[in-house]
Image (cartoon, rainbow, N blue to C red):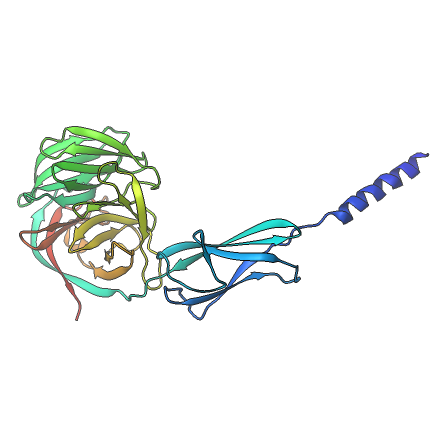
Length: 344
């Protein structure tokens, strides 16, 4: 056989192989709904985008691993949810996923503030966490590598009564107090510390497992709530500090990320936000993640000393005896005692 015939045979063989190869179509999940923003109670209709009408068998839909009908009434966790379709095509099992966001059914109420008192605050303090204990001592966690600290403060004078510097490899973040234990987060190092609040002696450390970073902390007396820079607030076991579950912070039309410093008051989580809106606080339902209130802190930052290191508002603590909130910010020279009230 001459070389020309051999070449034709090779080309013909490859052509046959190519023509016999089947390419799997790119199937997608299509969702039909009457809502611009999906909410629990809405009906969604599910189907597989199959423009060439391939024979698809045994189609099943799931949301977060639970089987659902193709006509489904939403009743799920707020925030991001995963819809999965499985079916048989050409004797093979196909799996297709699609993410949806379920928003809150609640339109947030609007709140404002009234300044009751102003107190001195260390202008070098890059405030990350702020909380009173049951004896109304004020504790503060500060950030920045090489400057992160834990502080006990006389709020009326601004005097620092006790201070502990973190190792320069740690960037301090939020704090909270349960009994004599003081819990402090670090930012990206995926480690937190538990101290004796009376003398700042280290009790033990704990690691983050599921949460991305360390941002804010608060507690309801039993569970600890932790923000991690995403839209998630994690619920931690108070003994092991493991992330048991989470809520996603959402409004009726937005998913809110960069939830920062946290405070627990009257069954709700009060939160600062970082760079989402520098003059807004949130009131969050700890069961669902729904934003029930938005606090307009506009004008507060203008009342402190203006300088090049001045940063966003951060730090919110409730004083039970005075029935007021105390707020400050990163490198602010003032601590404000305020009342928060609903707009009429």
